[in-house]
Length: 414
Image 1 (cartoon, rainbow, N blue to C red):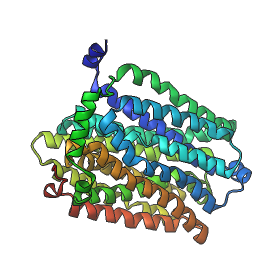
Image 2: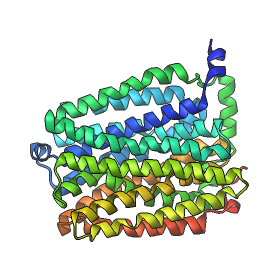
Image 3: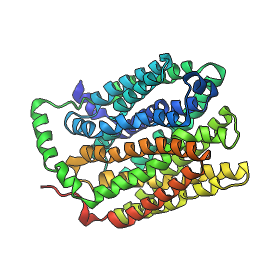
């Protein structure tokens, strides 16, 4: 039975499931952002801007802490069962958030969700490395990245609607439990890749051929971590603070802020998918994969700096326009950076471990972005300083791409 199912496994269908899993994870991690823009939620817990920053950043600290262990796990034990177990844990924890009544309990829930969601990215790259060729990876990653963008895009308006028409408690319970529906297609469509003792010994030997010290000695890895940080700093700012910015500085209602959050994240999802597909087409025609993906990445980082035009816009219409355009243009980076830094220049045995390592930088960016933005808001009373910081990090990402991503600097197999 298992052999028959394995033969029938459809990799592109699994990519869609991985994208849906990513979407569920982002709905559960961004539902808090809508709550933090709700005056009732803020007053119930007596939250200051600094405490809102702490609460937003809690997820990313535990998420970052487990990235290397999760990469180690999926390199050895496969993706099916680790992913299924972790998704069940984070969905139930997200639902339980609606039942807590203290700030410290909220922080604990966010830490647990972050730890469980740590499996998503290492497991995905382990699967893609095993099943897709270079000319297909940009498209596959474009599809996968749509899940990460549509999570906030759909989650923000849905969460806002549930809060306005029901309560923040029901919002957490409903969005958390709904994600459990994903488990049935995952368990029935993905083959069991949990290794036998003999297979495990082979995987351990393969993984040992590219030890962590070889990764840390590679400028490509440091470039990947820098880019992950710079990309995630802007993206996570939008995920954690955009609803509050639109409500508090631009005067939108909570529901309208959810609508414009949808447009921004839908924009980056569409651009990410098209950019990944376009790069794959160029590579399939014989163009160098590294050069093609670097061009898309640099263009995306530079295009996203238009966020600063939104910060200084005099009218609401122009502020909203640049809000959507800047995040959408960041989509040029998404799939191509993911392919370049986690697959194209990385030896196959080290994909999971490398992905976990790079995700540490992502989670660090999340913690810094969420908490630093709260502190800057507290000290200045405006979101402009936060956007100036984003501008600088985007320029750093473009520079890192040009300088550090070279084939001769890729990690070595011993």
